[in-house]
Image (tube, rainbow, N blue to C red; front, top):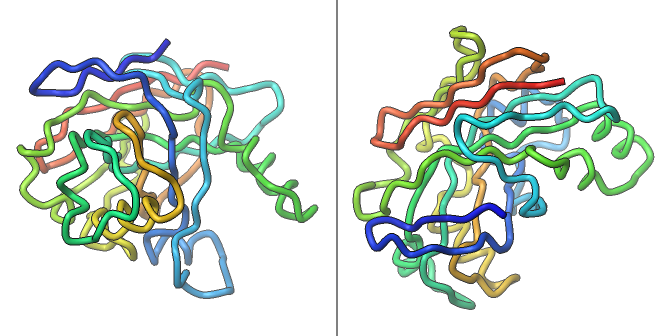
Length: 222
């Protein structure tokens, strides 16, 4: 079972909902060839808690896919729950931040989209939500002033800034709380910048940030 140790208190939490946001960076929307334009409200999907894997762990490519992609993200960890949270109070409900990866079986997702079916399976395989060490929210002055980068075998693949989010973290927390009651241990994967791409067995993925977040490193296994 994956356990969250919420700093600085050391409070141990079992992850609850893994809430994920798609299409939250304009350049990523464009690189995916979306002709519908930028979203006017967040694209929300969920992953099971069994998708979580800690830093230094492994991402396992499932037999159902031959095209798994990386997507680096900033993750907000809910420390204090709530419902219908005002945006101006939303960051008070975030207990920590971390780097995360939203792994996607792109071929599985493509087939589901083409058939007009949900694509939860493409996002929800075991190990498809790597999560880095948690940094107390009090140490992050502004979650919209962070860099996030991903290298694959030392080669830069993604290099983005949270300032480019279409929907900022506080807005997302408030928005999601109007749909779901947020609880301590819930995770919000806030979307990825451009530069997503495939991974293969043996690849080493390292996510870093210039804003004080601890690195996340995982190895890909077939």
